[in-house]
Amino acid sequence: MSILWSRRRLIRASGLMVGLAALPFGRSLGRVSKRVGESVRIGESARVKRIALKNLHTPESLEITFRRGEEYVPDALAAIQILLRDFRTGDQHLIDPALLDYLHDVAVRAGVDPVFSVISGYRSPRTNAMLHERSSGVAGGSLHMQGRAIDVRLAQVDCADLAAHALTMGCGGVGYYRKSDFVHLDTGAFRTWRG
Image 1 (cartoon, rainbow, N blue to C red):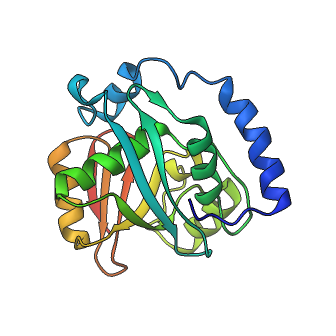
Image 2: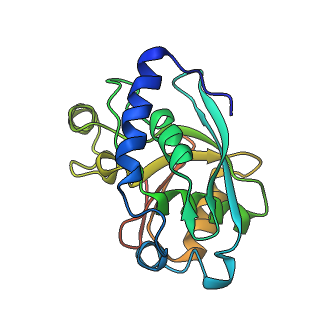
């Protein structure tokens, strides 16, 4: 894992890990999987899932195992939460583990390793309101504010193809932004749009 850790970030991560330990990440994934659709099937639950993320707004990147079998890895979720923080404010939010499954599974469907460049992960309400004022393409109630949405590019895959692969999964939100060259994915209801 190649993430830069300052003392402040390490202290913050320690506090987050204590909070994460109290969450039901070690339980069955049935509820989470159903919310995203059929992206995680019973026969796949024994697999180890890894992901690589590069934040395009900071010098940070990581490659990490976030799930082993039916359990998410708390340390990995904490590191991902830091990497996907609102880079404008530094605010962090729990990232929906089902979003990580979605990213992993769409990469598998595309036939490539899950190596993503991240344009936008978590957004604080303040940042989202500012972006909403500037662009009609930013939803006022964006799932980015709940840690349930991400804007990405997938290594070795054209964004139009990434969106098409996500659409074949039939789960969550899929927005293709051709001009800006990224795909929005979220764990909300299945829907699609172009920006």
